[in-house]
View (cartoon, rainbow, N blue to C red):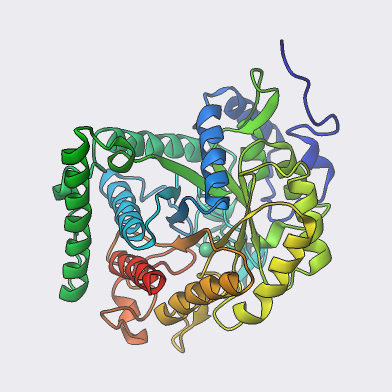
Length: 450
Ligand code: PEP
Ligand code: CO
């Protein structure tokens, strides 16, 4: 027997009746329609029971049983969809999770900002250079970043190319994870790549050895293998920005009687598109996935309360993740009121901290950067404020890469503004490099142990 659908006034296309911000304007509607029809027919990237599983994990995180680590590029690029880069990104997330597991003494749920993080919100629709005005770059799934009329024209075909790369990426990640890439019984897989800072390297090595010893001890004592600790699950997430793309991968699951976004496990609503009455909130309210919403300064209590009501009317465990991104300077003044507002709704949420998007600044040379000390400071404040308010920080959300890039300043090797030019490669926001990401995890772990 099929259960009745919960929402009678919702459909994967009902967002089209609402104002949709940050959407590209396609010149060829017929071609767009054709692409959406094709995307709707192709197999999904993830399946509903994985999505349900992540919802259960988020519910566990809400109860304080696990910690959530979400990270990856600001924007994935089609160009970077290659084996080494994907493996390194997976590796840094696994290594960070290991360090957090060791420090926080609880399992860590890993969620990559990958396999679909291809669409970006922008502050303006157009960009002008030397008198020429063109549409701005909105991510590889929409257009290309070169400043030519051809490259900047939104092209519906790119939706298919993005879908394919998302599938290729997740396929490879799944194979690596299933193949033992993350098995603690093989610490050689956990070797650090280009970690040059000797102190960090030693500290990391000690953590791996200590975990391996605990595992061996437990297995020796019990005579059984610890599968849960040694085998990892890995989930995908991206900003659910491009609503045609999300809609096309939204499927009705008969067995459950609900609609699922099967382009990813955990989509989130970006800070710029969380308007009440807007298309994104309309789309997200109807899907069964666990969902994130970016929140921060400028979002008042009434708005936040209403968002929680619309997005989690049934107070479903594991449904709603609020990702706060205030900036190191504003978090202590802004977060307590937000926690109170949500508490007053009586609805459970998972709070996680994005210490990146409130800490973006420009160097005198005009490069977009973030300072490691501000990123760390925002995370430490987040733990402190939640503790003080009788709440709990359940995870962190970072922009990072497994590469040796130079985009954020600071960290153990003390990267300066002048050093940023060496390997500044991001197409949108500055990411923590491999070493900075691992260091951040260690400092969070150390801070919590104290
Ligand atoms: C992002 O996560 O890349 C992003 C654009 O964040 P926010 O919506 O918080 O600005
Ligand atoms: Co970003």
